[in-house]
Length: 171
View 1: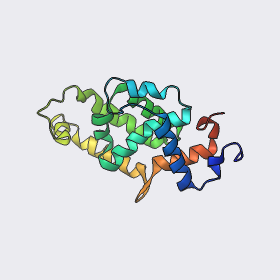
View 2 (view 1 turned 90 degrees about the vertical axis):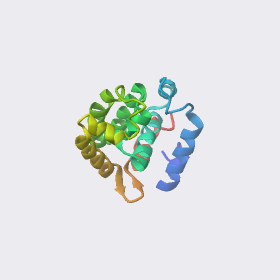
View 3 (view 1 turned 180 degrees about the vertical axis):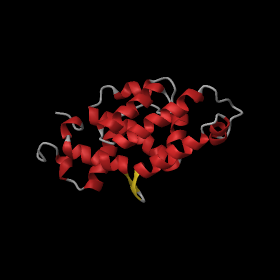
View 4 (view 1 turned 30 degrees about the vertical axis):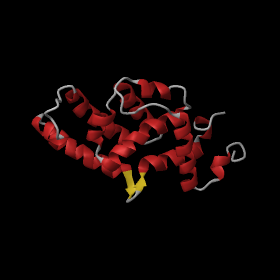
């Protein structure tokens, strides 16, 4: 199998870099857009690359912000659906469950947010969901980090690539 997919001969760190380079070359568009164009660009990717692209932005959110804040940046419905599907595809079932609950808490409120709502967490407090949002953020940070500076999402990419190379690199 390694002969068919040379990337699998690499160690985990090198394979992750290869995957990131592959995604950079294959994915176009602005994940922050609200028009659905970014998610539409994922449709023609192999299932593994599709999952990796969508979950990359959740990893960014977990690193820089939180799972609840994620929807403020990447709340376009099709990208949210791709992210949820991607977490499941990659075998991150607990994180997918946390993501689903955070989506149920936050997404219905986003349309009520105005320019005056500068602080997202104050907004969540005013809406009466701040405590649950904080709990979900804590849970997601725990699920998203294997150890300091190690991402559960990126580790899942490597594991998935080794288990299902045809779903990443194609046939």
